[in-house]
Image (tube, each protein chain N blue to C red):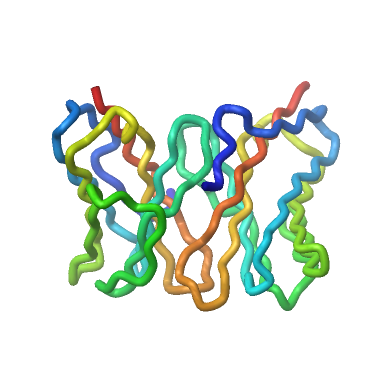
Length: 112
Length: 112
C-alpha cells in the first residue's frame, strides 16, 4: 500500500519561509501529476498539476517541479502561512490506467 | 466546495452490517473514483467508474462493491463490516482520465 501509518514525515517551517515538499514516483509511464492538500477532517483539495511534457509549472505562491530523469516531483510553497499547515499528497496518473496513485503524504507544520 | 457531494457525512454501524455510501459527482464529470483513508494514513484507491462502467480496480475487498448509475451518481456498498473497515471513504470525480480529480468531503464510517 501507499500509507506510512501514523508516522507521516513532517516538515516544520517558520511562517514566512519557503517550503519544499518532495515526492518520488516509480513508474516511467506516469504522464500526469497532481499535488493535493488535505486539512484535518476534510477531503483532499487540488493545488496544482503538471503534465510529463513540462518540468515546471507555477501557480499562486506554489511551484511544481518535475524531474523525469530521477522520477522526482516537488512542491514549493513561497512565504508559507499558518493556513498552509496540512498534509500534502502527490498523485500520479499512469498512462493507460484509470486511477490516480497517491504517495504517502507529508505533513507540513507552520510555526509562527 | 469541490462540487462533489457525499452522503452521509458520518455513519456508525455494528460489525457484520452492510452500509451504502453515496456520491454525486461534479456536473459533467463522467469518472468517479472511490478511496479509503484509514486514520492518519494515505489514500488507498478502491475502484473507478467511467460513464457507468468499471474502469479500474484497486485494493478493494470482495465484501465491497460499487456501481455508477445512469445519472452518474455512484454508490459504494460495504458488507459484513469489520472493525478494521472504520475509515474515511472519499469519492472523487473528474471529466475523464488524465484530469485532476476533485474530492468530496468524505464519509466517516465507524464500525463498533
